[in-house]
Length: 200
Image 1 (cartoon, rainbow, N blue to C red):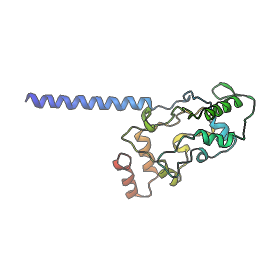
Image 2: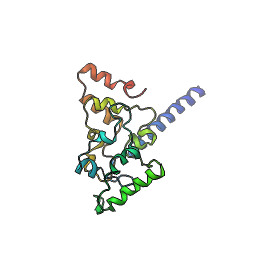
Image 3: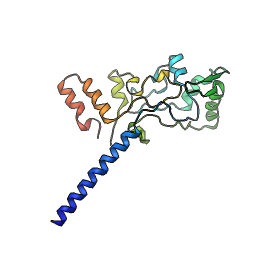
């Protein structure tokens, strides 16, 4: 009888800890209107908004890989070997003033030193760092892009952001509601809601 009681208490404690853990993860997943400080103030508003550069130009692996890929310094230098940028002061939406050419010179400095730019991860589920998702979740960008989803579905209107921030709460509920809304039929909906669709 004593062992059964101890087993029951262990189950209850485990349940409470798991529930508390998910609650804390969900709290850290709240959208934030201010993104993290980056080593180079890269404005998506200038690049994909004003200059209308498509997301896949820089995040070129979205159609062929499960990960979108953060652009290498070489990718940046593909344009900025020729585009020096304007030598002007620019004030971001958050009120930070930078010199555009000086920010591009930071990129050139990484290129000269043959160092990758240490970008700080912005999006992901539950505020994690490991590839943006907890280890038990597998998100495949390629499947979603090939299906025709716009990047803004999950990432918000990045083309309007100077400093990229987490625009959506990427929780399991967010993903499941999208799977339900975009299923072709009931059979497809059942497949998309199967645990092994994302947890394998």
